[in-house]
Length: 237
Image 1 (cartoon, rainbow, N blue to C red):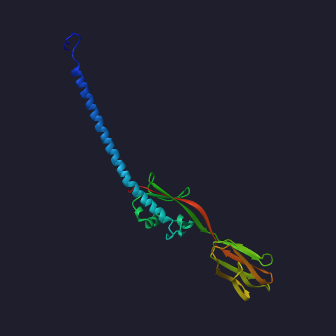
Image 2 (cartoon, rainbow, N blue to C red):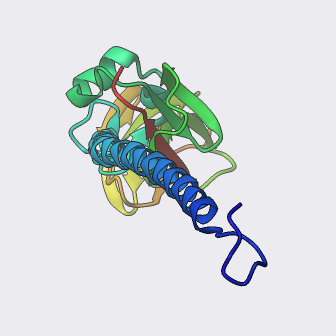
Image 3 (cartoon, rainbow, N blue to C red):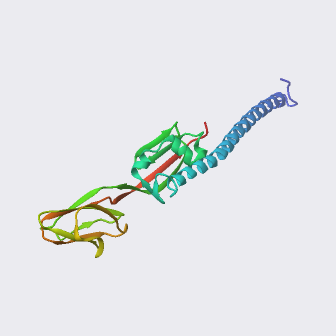
């Protein structure tokens, strides 16, 4: 160290210069590292931004087609046939929504997985409120001696009527809501099928001479329940 003019000490400029150079080098390394990380994040964000709209489009299309009235398992818009939707296959889904062919997907109703291919966890999820419908066959028996009428719930489009008179009893007329459904002045006997209004609750009455025998009314009303449909679609394989 070279003595200063006052004899107290030497110059520190070289040491400071070296420290500044080291600090500058470290700062440059940090800057380059941060830039590389930012570029990597940007590329990742761009890839995700490109992937997510495509996933959402495919998921939305599949959800829409699953509730469309022209799908084989749909009775009416948003009304799904319970048996048909539960029998859905991967081939059926690919036929409904061709864009799903190269992607994993999952279809759920409420808390049950109906169909799954691959592992779509982390993919795009689309939800729909739907109605599940099923046919519930019921037979109502009218005793001619005891009963005046039977009531059949709405949402059935036809009735199967079986008339079984006994002894000298003759059944001439079957009415539904005051409309003549079946008529034979010589007496009805055996089984016949007739169409009825789908939206109306039906009151079936019988006109007979005598009171021995029965009339059986078989109907298949539609029963429904609200449900939650969930579709999840992942990235292309």
